[in-house]
Length: 452
Image (cartoon, rainbow, N blue to C red):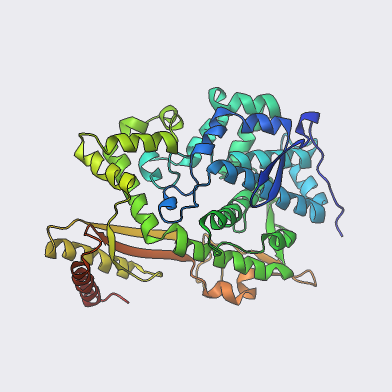
């Protein structure tokens, strides 16, 4: 049995003397130094950015924020790290010590960098989170803005450096960004935050399920953490592995991802309001949010106030989307493909969209393509392993086998969720017109060769 290694605290101000209640994890503990980061204006901003944008239009309880999610990710990442330190702390310690700057107190430093990266991983989110990200962060992403916030001395860089050391902002940023700049010995920390069974996804599945009032995202995450193990890889790298007894709870995680994507994240009502947000921000123009400073000056509250003003404004290109958001007046679904749509079905759906516009020229149609990754794990039927992960399962005898060979469920859950939908702006009570449009769409879809 590998010797247990309990990470020490770097300074007196790093002891977790504070706590806050969390509806998912119970108490979340943090230190004086971390409290200063939590109280920073740019982190406090996350209190006013909802985790699920306008999903409350569908699930009224979905008003929770990126603030509480970020605290939860820090808690879960810490629990996962402590579990790995308990079973293979000596291996973690020797591996981290190979990284420049981690020679002294390697476990304590690694644990603290992990906690900060988990806490700050979403600090660059724009208003309404992912809904309008492609427009607001055009040519970039919220992760890029997160890294800038952490490293910029005038934003959070000085605050982090003052509390955690001269190199701490860059260490945290590398852990969030990943890539070749992250030492291979520290890749295991990145996987804890954002991997195949990571703290980020685990927290949002549990938290979103709770606030939406659904059961789809719930699974035995405590058992999964207790089943974590380590596997030694090339170039002094470490990989998260799974004890044989944890296969079923990991399968439950994969099923939770699939069901939350189909029932919540890509629900038709959620998607149409995401579409309105993208169209609204696009019509509003890039000048409104074309710099990091402008983005960080906004949150859901201020952006929604702007939407309410624009719903009464003179610019029709902006007003039509703002008024739909304000009044919850949305297009109705008239056609959708199956949940496992392929490229051919997407093409057929696009043709149906064009034909509907020709057949009903007085009506407004909107086409939407939803696409989400469920997992990236290698299974036996895969012909190409590029970009896929061989998650090792440690058997009772200490042998390693890929999870894809051990799990029958994993082989049957689609790796991606993909669906195309067509919406139409028509009166909710005009059932005859809606039925006529739907029948036309189905007939045209099958005529093209689409599957039901």
